[in-house]
Image (tube, rainbow, N blue to C red; front, side, top):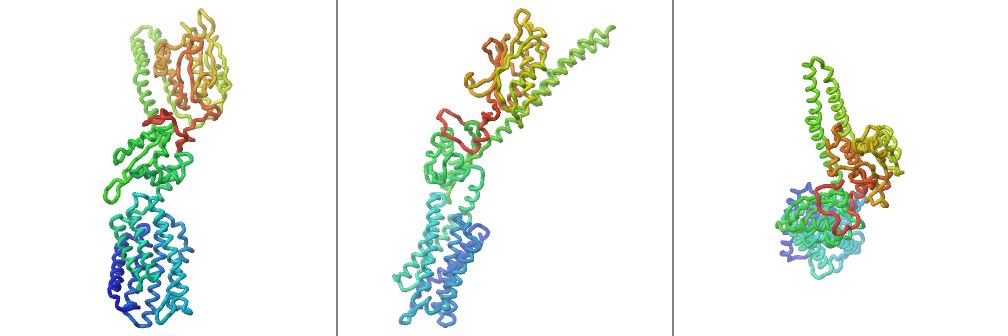
Length: 593
């Protein structure tokens, strides 16, 4: 080596000391992703620097040969380990298979052997006593620049994708890489007569120190984030303060039909345009950098969104992390629990009030019977009280059974069930007309019970002073009709109706579905409540009104016609579908049934 380069020797020593200090810092974080290969880079650079220092002060031929080998061993492993670190850091460790690692590791070892052996002067060539790079060394230099170029491209790509969120640490890595191979390029190109690579590594080491200490390079490893957001089923968005999409995981892209990774870097408003609910939610979320949670509904799907502000190392707000979760099933479960609680409260009221009345009546007549000379005269009243209690208990049990959600519906003929129910009810002279040939998905036992209650309600309440045979004393027999609701019938969805030509409903309208509501002193008031419970258990909607013939009419909509009009709730979970009009859908804390 040349003499009189004491300042350069000091630079080599400084670079070696800095490499040692960085190695100590990195070892304190050795359990974190990416630190081990970066530690290998720092140690290899240290070996490179120490070898250069010793070659400058030791002139023994054997020592020179050994130090030449260690020098190029450090050079080779510095290149190799930095490539490994970059692949891990940018999320491409799938390329680091055992065969590839073996090939990458073999290059530094082969380089050191060739440097020591120098076969046929192919590694070094001597011209007038000066060593110059031979063909094999030029091949290594080409390989090294290829690797460093790849590293630079990977870091640049990550820097572009991360924008402001990881800009500090990525820039430190980028300029450190550039400093290293530019400094070496100056020496190889012959612009200077001494190896300036250590100067590049001094700069690189300083930048790595900044990345580790200031930007917490060893703590904030982007690939750890990538692994999480790419595998979770929740939609994850990372958005900067300029409303640009910095990152978006597959689950979030699936929410928007046709969206792919090309949306990264675009304005988030271009993605949510046409979804007024989302636009409103986003504007509210981004008004201030505070953590928030909210729920909203789109059609039959309910979503929960959590927004978390993202800050850099100086606690400056640089963006938002948005996590969107489909909570449709949770909402349905909550609604079912609420319905069950309502039924429990309903049953408690029935037991405490409705059953207590006939029980008190029976107790009163029983006391009178004990004191009377002829107790038999009170037995009929006691028997009637017991019969009423039995009827109430049967209706309460029906409410409990019929109100639970239908989980396994089957195709059934609406006409067949209506006719079967008609046969089981004492309808007297009343007649049934079934104009529907609809096949629906339902629980046949519950639908039979539904028809029985509706038919019984028509017969008992449809005519003035109705007789037991269902006939009007001054008119014709009652007529009951079961028909289909469809597009041609003015209905908004497929369904069916039950109507009669009797007196119709009282002015209270929808109050007829309330528990205990009845206009008949002998009735329990639970018949139509049971009907509503059965409809709700199927996911249907039931409404009461006046029919075309002036009597009562009950409409059932939202009915599945043998699966043909099955609700899209399950099918639309996980996708927002097509953009909706501005008036469609408002933020809500509940999911439509």
